[in-house]
Amino acid sequence: MKPWLRIAGATLAGLVLGVSTAVAAQGKYPDKPIRLIVPVAPGGGTDFIARLLGQKLNEAWGEPVIVDNRPGAAGNLGVEIAAKAVPDGYTLVIPITSFPINPSLYAKLPFDTVRDFAPITLVASAPLLLVVNPKLQANSVKELIALAKAKPGALNFANSGSGTTAHLAGEMFKRMAGVDIVSVPYKGGGPAVIDLLAGNVQMYFSTIPAALTQVKAGRLRALAVTGGKRMSEISDIPTVSESGLAGFEVVAWFGMFAPARTPQPVVRKLNTELVRILNTSEVREKMAGHGLIPGGNTPEQLGSFLKAEIAKWSQVIKDADIRIP
Image: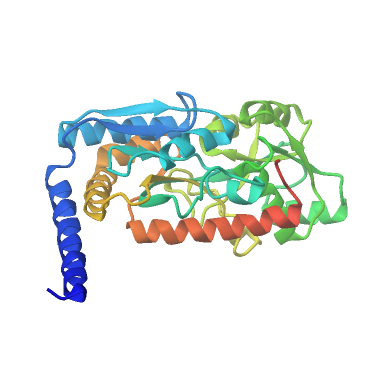
C-alpha cells in the first residue's frame, strides 16, 4: 500500500473511532457519580443553585451529583480545579459571578476563562437593586443623577468588595451618568447594607433578597433594578435603563461549564436535561424565591454571552483603573 493511502486510512480510522467513542459516551453517560464544583463555601446563591440542579439531575438520571465546595482566591481556586479535570463530563463547575470579571481584574490567572471550558448552559441570572438611604433627596434615578451632578464628590456608594458585581455596577453607573460618586469598599454585602441603613453611605447596588425586606419596611428606598426588564415580583420598580440611563444593564449570572474537550454528545445531553429542569415550575418558583431568573440556553449562546461579558467588564475596569495583583 502506498504511504499516502496508509496515512489517509489511519486518519479516517481515527475519525471513525472518535465519533464512535463520542456516540458511546452519549449512550452510557452518566454511569457514575458526577462532581459539581462550587468555588465558594456552602450557603449563598451559587451553592443553592448547584444543590438544586444537582438534586434534579440525580432524580432524572439516578446517579449522585456530589457538590464539591472549593472556596478560595475569589472563586479562582475551584475554577482552576475544574479546568484541569479529566474532560469526560464527570466534573462540572458553576463559577461565581466574578467569572467574566476576573480576566481583566487579575494580572494573571491559572486558566483561560474562554479556552479552558466547554459552556453547557446559563442556569440563572440575578439583577441587582439600586437602593438608597431614605434621607437622600432622590426618589428616582434621574433625581439621583441630578443630585450627584450638583454635588460632585459629595455622594458615595457602598461596594461589597473590589471587583465585585456591586462595585462594577457603581463604576459603570458613574461612567454612563457622567457623575463623580465615591466608592466605599466593604468586606461583603452584609456590612454594606448595615452602613447604608445607618446613613454612612448613600447608595448601594444590592442583591435583591438582601435589600428587599428593608425596602418593604421603609428602611431603604428602591430606585431601580439593573436588569434589561422589570421583575414580575417587583414590577412597580423600574429598570435603570428606562429611568434615564438608557442601555445600563448589569446582571449577576451563573453558568454551567465542563472542562474543554468534553465530548460534544455529553455536553448536549447535559444541556438538554438542564434546560428541561430549568423550565419546570418547581425550579422556577424556588429560584424566584431567591431573586433568581432561571436560564436555559444553548452552549453556543452561553459561550457568546461569556465573551461579551468579558469585553464589557474589561472596559469598565480599565476606565475605573481597578487592578488586583
